[in-house]
Image 1: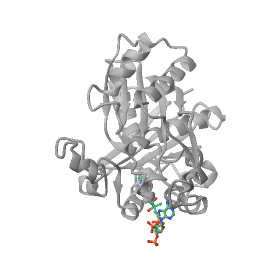
Image 2 (image 1 turned 180 degrees about the horizontal axis):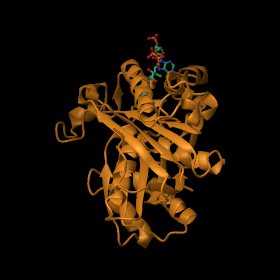
Image 3 (image 1 turned 90 degrees about the horizontal axis):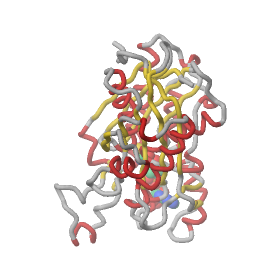
Length: 333
Ligand SMILES: CC(C)(COP(=O)(O)OP(=O)(O)OC[C@H]1O[C@@H](n2cnc3c(N)ncnc32)[C@H](O)[C@@H]1OP(=O)(O)O)[C@@H](O)C(=O)NCCC(=O)NCCS
């Protein structure tokens, strides 16, 4: 059974923002025991952008959303909702969505943050689309943003080289029949929680001298277990989208996977029997920006003219939780 929205909803504009400071693998090799060859061959990453001290998620989210609004020719006060997917909010509360609302003066919008790590943008996309499909809303902004550099342990070379900072934003609106989101599937398996997490800083283990000394307010990960699960679930959820909607891989114009590791992405594409030239890749320049990878990849593909109205596009993600899912859509503009 497909998960069809009660009325067609699609992305009508995109935007993105990366902080200025760019670090190559060679830059990292000057401050830790690593090298360009290892990082590139194991992950596909060549460089990443990191914020300067004192810059929060909303500082990246605001210009990304403003770009999407400008490209749509929409004023901020037309927005009715702002959903921000992030695991690195400016503060635990108030929500980053509230800061974004105030900064862009979206005075008629409500908003909230959604925490699903690297799957966050897909969860927020279909949540925002469902608000519109309900008939109660017609203009919703969805932002995927993360400042991963704020939670990286620079003494753990197995994780800190993998992540970058960035924001991607989309505008969702009702669209013509046959366009927009066609189907989606989201899943969670909390048993995988301990394999990719930030152990301290929440209610279970509030930040203390001890947690800071133990570096528990940083990303902890079992790389190889995450790797295997990510390949399996991204491929299977993608396959589900194709099978239950009667499509073959060659019907897809583009595959836009979460950018965790080029080897994960290529393995998932292979299992989907998809030619690699249909996969959108930005991990080489921006690394894993968590909730921002898919909206920024969509923005870049759109800017490069890789999608036309009506093209079939598959989005697929996997992240901490474990969380994962896929969205099948027809590009709407
Ligand atoms: C993290 C990851 C790149 C590691 O790749 P891998 O091929 O499994 O590498 P290993 O962990 O087996 O490490 C191999 C060696 O490289 C070393 N190494 C690790 N990080 C290194 C670095 N940055 N530079 C140089 N060497 C490094 C290790 O210490 C190890 O050395 P050893 O054999 O002497 O012990 C890979 O497991 C991965 O990408 N996992 C998924 C992570 C992810 O995407 N998370 C987010 C999901 S949303």
